[in-house]
Structures are given as structure tokens and as C-alpha cells.
Amino acid sequence: MRKKTNRTNIGGQAVIQGVMMRGKTAMATVVRDDNGELQMEAVRVTAPEKRAKWMRFPFIRGVVNFVLSLVGGMQTLMRSADAAYPEEEEQKSKLSKWMEDHLKLSTGDILSTISLILGIVIAVGLFIYLPLLFTGLIADAVPAVAKSEAYGLWYHLIEGGFRLVIFILYILFTLIFPSLRETYMCHGAEHKTINCYEYGMPLTVENVKSCSRLHDRCGTTFLFLVLFISIIVFALVGVPLDMFYQYAGIGGIWDNVLFVLVRILLLPVVAGISYEVLKLLSYTDSPLVLPLKAPGYLLQKLTTREPTDGMIECAICAFEKVQKMDADPNVPEMLFATVTKLSKLSAFMNKVFAEQGIDESDAEWILSLALKIPRSALSEERVVTRAECKEILEIFQKRLTHRPLWYIVGDAEFYGYTFKVDERVLIPRPETELLVEQAIGSLKQGDSVLDLCTGSGAIAVSVACEAAKDKRITVLASDISEEALEVARENARINKANVAFVKSDLFENIYSRFNLITANPPYIKRAEIETLEEEVRGYEPHLALDGGEDGLDFYRRIAEKVSRHLVRGGLLILECGEGQAQDIIKIFQTTAHCDFAMVVKDYAGVERVVKIGF
Image (cartoon, rainbow, N blue to C red; front, side, top):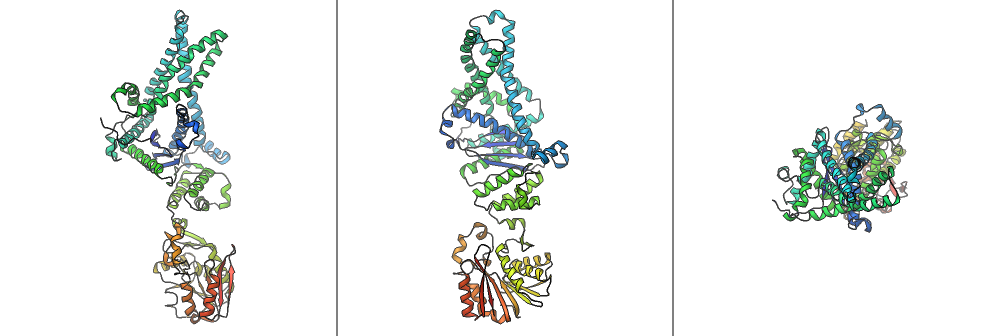
């Protein structure tokens, strides 16, 4: 027998076409959907040590875990069914569509609630009422025995025996159904994976396959302990209660009702004791406790089956995800790509983005773009289809890497136009629209425009498109980066803008004079670049950010030569960083001897644009 060297508190549950694993702080479910792809849902759970103090007391903690497992297990089971066997749009019944449109509920929401209620009713009927009925029949059939003083104890022991037999028959009955046999295979994958880790072996499919599918902390063993201990507890409590009933003259239907109610009320006590027993047995592999473990192992022979490689992959994936989340509180949560409510999806994305330090407005943008609705309409509840949810979550997962949203989407809106963007260019900012607005307002018929440091071409293309509505102008755009120019040319083509492009380090390859020169040059202080948000410093081109030691290098270089490239009466419009406007004006007054200079503030009151006349 292998010796366990890596004890873990991670436990699990078989679900539809997959496995759920639960650790101290996280729970991950992995299923294989109808396309053969792995889907994962991983959420944070309250760590035991963070629960209320009274919930952590021995015996009480067993009750808490029992209830959480019951409710959470059913929800996980239904969620896995939604992910593994989604209801496609064309297959939905009229009732399903009506519920989505009018009640804003998915079929899964309804079935989950019904299944939980039905499961509790069936459990009470099978394991409380039915044993009571059978035992009563024996008492009626053998009245002499029923009148014996010793029968009170035997009555409860026989009733408990029936409960245990019904449980075993119930398990055997489930083996008839192929879908449940598949679930038992997933159960085997769960046990084998946990055992593989506890044996100290790397989690590979081959290693997991070689491990036992029996485990000390199995839910099947727990249920057996619940049933076995309930026989003792119910008997110890039942005998004095019988005496009380006789003394109080309670009989008939009320006797049966009280009998059922007392057993339901005692279930938490039984669950608490069973949990502590299971926990104690799991601490050791000593042969001395094997007789106590043996019944559970025998039942696990029925409720586990040898899994397929695909099922083992699900179990390994879920186990490793929980390990990562337990080890690092910053590992983000995940959702299945399945039918869900818009409000639920939105709340989830906002929560995770807030935890990861990502602007929560990006969640609105993702939903708006994927659902093709304005952001203002996101407050209206609706059901998000599986295909829509999949697209949304794919973008969401990429955004969690801190890659800028507009690089992920591939384009950005600027001044009412669509611009292709990627890591070759800066993402156009809304504040730069103020520069475009000032430029367009200054143009006259026949003017020529030069846009320096054009990047994505946002300024040049927007000016060309807007001016073309009522003026005839020419626009030339330059940049030192050939990669940036490739993007800018593509944007001019997309927006049908008449813009010429030239590779040039500012004025290096510029030989003409212009009525208007625009520029949004690099203006970030070199030492501050590493302090910028990860989205900026990690993805946007530093060539377009680095403005030198004080952020003003490019303004000085432009000031040295701008007068050679502006006609008399020409205008230079520059964007600048916060607090830089007055220093820029001094540079141009001293170096370029400009005729006038003025500052335009943006909507936040920041001095954002400098206009300089010659």
C-alpha cells in the first residue's frame, strides 16, 4: 500500500461530465461540453477560519459543512449540466423563451430550485418515512412482540436497519442508468486525483490512473456514517420519547408526524457527529481502523468507476485551479460560458475587475460590444445566450491579463470613427478629441495639414474626414515607426480618409510648409513610465510615451524647426500632459518666437491643448 505524504484538505464531487474540487478558499468545477472542450467555473468561498466562531466548534462545523455541501453540491450539479448540455437557441421550447423574455429567468434557474426541493422531499420520503412504514408493518404483523417492553429499542434498531438497506438498494438502483454510471466514473476520477497528490506523485493522467479510486473523505462514506450513527442516535432518543408519548397519550397519526419531525430535527446532530468521525478516520492509514473504514470502502466500490482519460483531465484541471486559488488570493474567478442573467454576469465581472485593479467600466464596454447594445441599456435585465456568454468571457479572460481592452477588441472609437489598434500604436484617448475639435475649427478652404507623431492616425484621419464634409484640404501624417504607419494607413483606408503618410523623425523628411501642424507627441517623464498602470507600461509602445527626463524633449525639438514648416499666419496645436502647458508655452516663446500662445482646458478642467500662432 502506498503511503500518503501530501495530506490535503481539498475534496470534491462528481458532476455532469466533469469534476468539482473544493479547497479552503475556492471551488473549481471543470466539465467537458458537447463540443468536447473543457469548461471551467472557479469561485471564491468563505474559508473555514473566517466563518463565525460558533460555526467552527466541533460537531457544529459538521452541520455547517453538511448544509453547505448539500446546497452548493446541488447548485454545482445544475451548473455543470448547463455547461455540459446547453439548450441551444433553436432547441428552446416556447415556455423557455417566454420565461427568458418575460420573467428574465433561464430554464436552469427553475430546474435548480425544483431539483433541490424535490431532492429533499425524496430523501425524507425514502430514508425517514419509508423505514417508519416498514417497521410499523412489522409491529402490526407481530402484535405480541410489539407489546413487549424490550420492543421499544428493537423498533428503532429495525427502523434504522431498513434505512440502511434502502440506502444500499438506492445505490444499486442508480447503477441501472448509464448517465449515473458516467457520473460514478467522474467520482472515481476525483478520488484518484486527490490520492495521486497525497501519494506525492505528479498530477499526470498516467499517474492518476494508477491510483486507488477509494478515499477516506468520500461523501459516500459520510452518508454511510450518517445512516449508521442515526440508528444509534434515533434509538437513544426514540425510546424515552416513546415513553413520553405513552404517558401523554399521543398516538395515531400524531405519533407518526412527531416521529418524522424528531428525526428531521436530529439530522444536524447526526451530521455533526458523523463529520467528526470521518475527520478522525481520515487522519490515519493504520490497519487498526480498517474495520471502521471498510463499510465505506465497500460502498465506494459501487459509487466509483474507473474513469476515462478525459474525466481525469477534468479532475486534474479542477484540482490545480483550486490549489492556485488557495495559494494566491489574487487568482481571479471564472464562470461557465452558458445561459445566464445579464445582471449576474455584470455583477461577476465588476467584482473580479475591482479585485484585480481593472477599471470596472471595461465590464460595461465588454457587455455593450458583445451584446451590440448601448451601455445605457445594460440596466435592463435580459438572458444572455450561451454564444454571447462565451464571447463575453473570452474577452473578459484576456482583459484579466491586463492587456488593454481595445487591443483585445482590435479597434477603438475616436471622434465618431473606428480605428484599428494593437501594440504597435497608442490607444486613442477621449481627451485627444479636444485637439481634433480645435484643429477642425481653425481650418479654411484649401488649407494643408501636417500631423506629427501620428501613431494610429487618429488625429489625421479624423481631421481629414471631418474637413472633407465642407472643405477641400490636404493632410500629411508622419511617424518615426514604420509599424505605426502600417496601422495608420489601414485606418485611413477603413475610414476612406484622404491622408498621405511619410516615415519621418518629426521634421526630418518633411519639406513643405503647412497652414496647420498638429501633434500629440510623447510627453511622459522617463522615470514615471514604470509607475504607470500595467495596461500602459506593459503593452503600449514606450516609443510613443517617453518624453525624456522632464517629458518635454519633443516639444523642444518641434520648437527648433516648426517655423520653417508653417506658412505666415500658420497654427500649431499640441496636446500635453497635466501641468506642462505653461512650460511648453515658454519653450515656444523663447525658441520659436511665436506670435501668440493660448491654452484650452479639457472637460475635467485640465490644461490639455496648447495653440501657438506664427
